[in-house]
Image 1 (cartoon, rainbow, N blue to C red):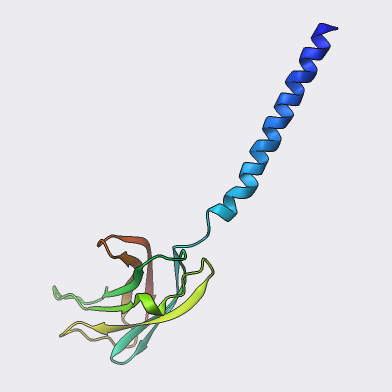
Image 2: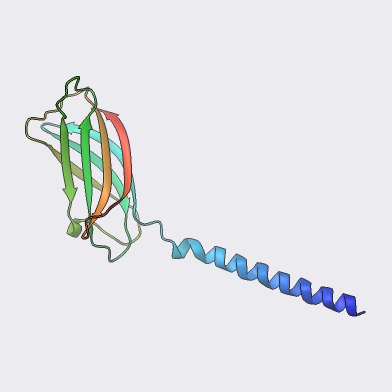
Amino acid sequence: MKTTGTRRRLAATAAAALIAGAGVLMAAPSAMAKANVLTIDKVSLHKPNVQVKVTYSCDPGLDHELVANARRLDTGTRDEVTAAGTVKRDKLICDSDSHVTQVNMRPAQGSHFVKGNKLKVTVFYFDNDGFSYAHEDAVAVL
């Protein structure tokens, strides 16, 4: 009889541990918001600028900018052809939900883009301390 009581206690303890573990797993996705994520949706040419459409999410209260850089891959020369743009902090909606923004990237001096150029585009967040994170890259043809 003593063995049956011990088994019941062990089974009850195991069941309680499983239920507690399941509760932790159920709470984890809400605690770990899907924020601070970037996705490049579309890259297009709007002469002389390059535009990138980005879906983003960010945690409430974060103080950072969204930065986009483009580099032409088909230059055939040693000269690098680049463009850059920023969405300032006050233009981002940081509520852990997904939002869409358009980043206008101005070409660097001496750089130009035309239809058919192949580009590597990188978007990322840049914070007050100089750190960048959530990098997303895409290769696109204008």
